[in-house]
Length: 278
Image (cartoon, rainbow, N blue to C red; front, side, top):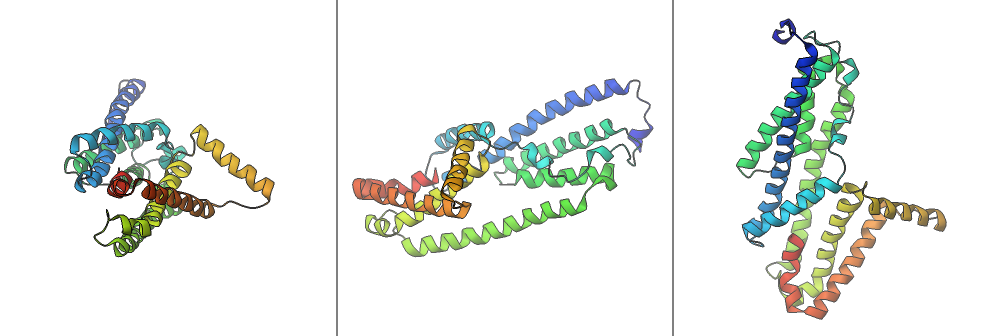
């Protein structure tokens, strides 16, 4: 109500100032997103004493930059249809549509930056996607409650919650299976010749599947590969589904890891899981 009652000398000037402020906050927010991702990744390899902190930060910094360049656009999160920007002209503050949209996105940048900065400062992991979704919901509800598409918002929130629960359960079961097979012999050649292939192959298959076919699906060579799979489907009359491709990659990686263990023996056994962690 305070914002609506202010008589601005020039609304255009105010909007330009907001755009400049939004640009600055967006840059800072982007830095914090990368910083938090780096903290999440460094915690894993440094905590396991696989790499020294300096080397871990160097590698993860390069990886974060590469991921930002090649991954799917982060704006896809904001395009989930959580709220309808076209309805922002009708809001409780009496703002026009453009000013209301600027208010929402600037508030999202501020809250996102503060949250990510706080979590990163303490080395704590946090989902940037979950932050963005709930910030958009909160800001849109404060400005124009009726513009929120609650069915779509509920679907997105349920997806986030289910993914956390399912990924936690799956990772627990996978770790228990791997630890049960290897026990304390993670660098023992005999144990790895028996179990290293299927464990390491599964890790590599999952990593490459989600990295290439999900996260980097807009990169040219990944699109070419996907199109090639479609061509095979049409020519052979059989569908190569994601599950089929995942198991195929699992088998190929398992064979490759087993071959490396046979050729390089103890050296490969010592480096297998540290390299996979990196």
